[in-house]
Image: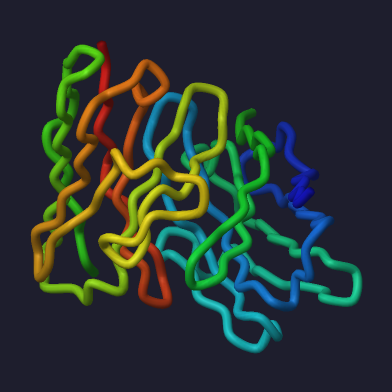
Length: 116
Length: 106
């Protein structure tokens, strides 16, 4: 059974940093491009970032560019999202997503709350 | 940046009826770059349609996708109780862009 488990969410003050991790089991992560998608509870889905299979190519939404860094460790089957200079509007549930051209797997999400 | 606009925002229907959800892109996109997701409360989204019209694994054939250029459609031929949820279209091409979602409710 494929599982993606996000961790690292929590309460952080504006301007602070947080590192999210996504641990994969039941699939070979290096076969997948990985994305982070966020969602304010009750609102729509917003794409955040993507890293390709070998980690050499990354891309970010304009809203997080320069503040967030996506990375992966295929040997450990994990993907991370380092978030800095956090703002209130970064508060959301963050999902990691493993993709192939015809399928994908989503974790259950980790909640990030940016508040003083 | 491509913008995806879904309509309607909410679709109120009964089991057995046909549902049609529209997704319009702000510029023409490849048919190999449009997908549809279903999301139920408290759950992660689930891929239903990719490449405009290909059903993902396990998706029943009452779900179909069509379209080209800037106009794409998700059709549910006969709604079942499990189909009442929020549906999102997604354009994928390096980066991703989601539509704002359409709630299909009873």
